[in-house]
Length: 632
Image (cartoon, rainbow, N blue to C red):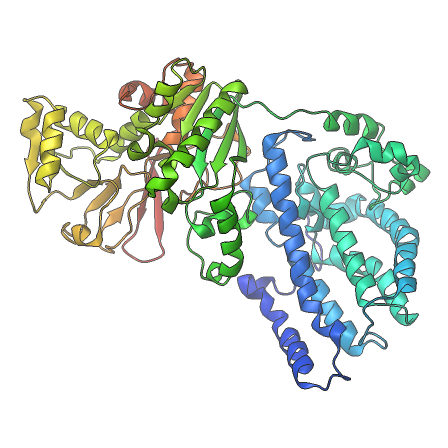
């Protein structure tokens, strides 16, 4: 929002929320129905193609978002090192409003404007006129409009909203108050309306012009430079006719320079070109890929999770991963990348963060949960993990953490497989189990004397049971085989605190993978479920409380956080990911994987000293209410 919002700041359909698309529904239904029922000679192809054009614009924007986020995460050719946070993501969620607005204007023009309907597919003279009128009146008028918007009166009421984003993303280009978009569409309509009145307009020329506007807008607001130098060397006048991302980035940092729309020509003419434009362009082009200090390796979970990745839909990535009903409608689209990653895929950089002096990167393996449980997929997955570890080591990373199923004991013995193959590995391999144990132990309410331990036994489960039994807490197990395995892991004295019972009476349940609905029903009313598993258990009881999987709130000095880690809330990080940061900050020159466990007390103390705070997330018995409590 602008610092002093003026009139026509809000979009007319803001009050509709996620149902704002209904404003297009009557027009889409009418155009489709008319095209289907009318005689071939009366059908208006230009009218029925408006909606597909709007969809193509949305897809165009989404592609730019993904490409830009991927490139800025890697670091090569990045322009600004400043961060993007949740505030900017929330401010830019309405990027599709301008697409809805343009759709309404096209439908109105098609219905009420003379010569606005039954346009031909292509006319070369109309195409030429569109771009002549753009390079002349549109670019000139936009330059002076833009300068006027930087006058303190208009800037404080309108344009400051756009400039709230210092580090721009492609969709930042269309984040303006409604009044500004009215002015912009008035300018962009000059070539389109002129050719309509001249009877030279065509579907091809209008669609090309809109695509050109979107292309240049998105390209100019990327935070990485990708316009090759040879382009300007081959055709020197092009520097006056086409701007670059670094050129426009200076406008967002300097504010009073580089006002032009897509053509820097008018900045040269009126003396408003930033003197550092060329040097920033050269510097950005030669910037190398960033070398991380800590790498966290994750993977895709479910087919629809691709939309929740930071490289997917920015808004969905900024919220905890929850199943959305409308994503089921996208299954034909979802299946396509699923098949591609199934057949061919390579590890990619998904996110970049900064923690004090440490450079953090999250890498993702294009494999789904289901593939990790297929024996014939294990070799290829382990090969991808191994390649990622070696790549991180070659880049000079200090610590490499294994997230989600990448550390599964059945897959690679919690990473021990890679240490056996590479005993002199420079990068330290961390599975984060010690911090996960510490978080679970510190999540148990004080004064607790009895707990139930359920779910798949793992090194985390054994460590929790050992610590509790040694501390005098009775640990109930419900299966004889589990009881025997745990008994073998603890001393004879501590083993007295292990109790085998089919009906555990304690109301504190520590649960791992494999906790089904039947077992949850055995818990008494008001039971507190505390997961030690990587994935959260399904919540089958409304009369019980469920804590989060082992995780902590991150401190403010963790920067560039604009997405959620899987199902966790904003600015909450899993124990497995935090552990790598702590190992690097404390310069612990040890591996933590396989059967190796780090000091639970030591890593817990380090997490608190570096600003991480305990998280207790539970679901209220009343549906759709989430409570987050922290201990400070």
